[in-house]
Image (cartoon, rainbow, N blue to C red):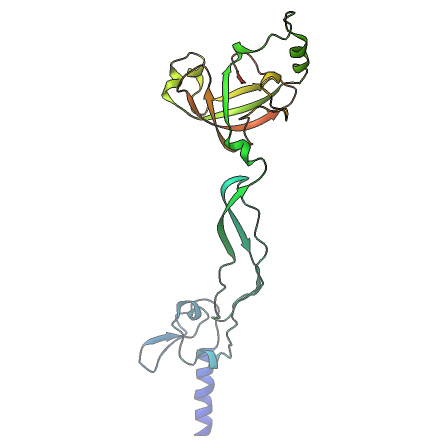
Length: 238
């Protein structure tokens, strides 16, 4: 009898030994007469036999994670943005252990840098027909000194323009997704040698047409070029 009992126990253990993946032949009836499995996949599907852990000598290993890393810089240089942090897995889960918690966190942030105020400025623009003639011999000496400052160019992509812009021929070209060159001449420069409203790279800012009442909109600066002159039919800052 002892030998027969031992043989039955060994046979049952063999049936319950872990097998990789789903094996429909590795099936038993539980104490409640429901179907249960003793293959490796049962830990995922949750249909292991009651003595699976004991028969297969498996102990669950829970996931362990490291400490959170630092928060990343705000994704925006001006205004609302997002920041995130992450952590690494120290010990991955095994044998049906507790899964790993979230490894990334994200939250909102509000960026405000010294250059952020530039994005809030509204640029006033005119067509390049209003450019100064630097070779005019009747210019006063103090005006000639002011003109020694070199111009620079910014390439802007229009994102929005009001209906009033269609009234003037020069402003009618300010349409959605059009790229325009806007030149900053010395006459329009502030004491810090820049034009108001020249914007920030890849940040939406706003503009207003000085000689077209009601014409205004928004744009995004795509590039900045020093010592530059925009081609004909462009814009200037005023």
